[in-house]
Amino acid sequence: MESLYVDLQHKFNFLKSEWTKDEAERLQMRKALRAAHQQIEALSKQNERLLGLLGEVNSEQQRMLDAKDTIMKTLAMREKLNLTAALL
Image (cartoon, rainbow, N blue to C red; front, side):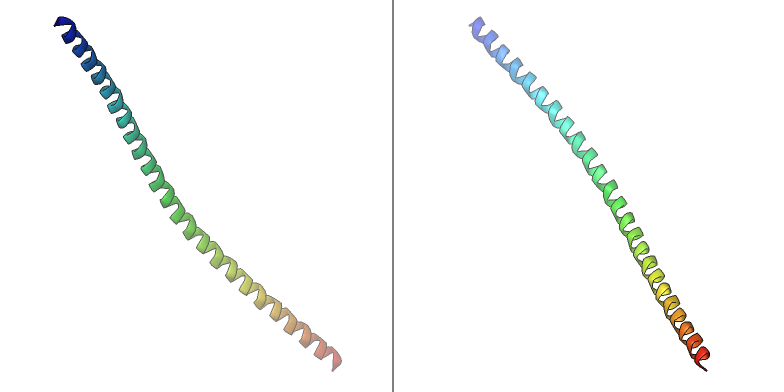
């Protein structure tokens, strides 16, 4: 009878140690998951900020292209006026 008790005690201790290891692993995985969520949140905020900056850069680029077109048209008109004045 005593060997049965010892065997059961051994199995119980083994199961308890396995449960403890599994619980520690589960807690470690939850901690890693929390860290991953925080990193995702930080990257999401950074992505939003970068998209905003990209929009500003695109607007500035378009403004500069419009200014260049205006200058080119002005120079073309000026050249035409110089040619017209030279012909008269």
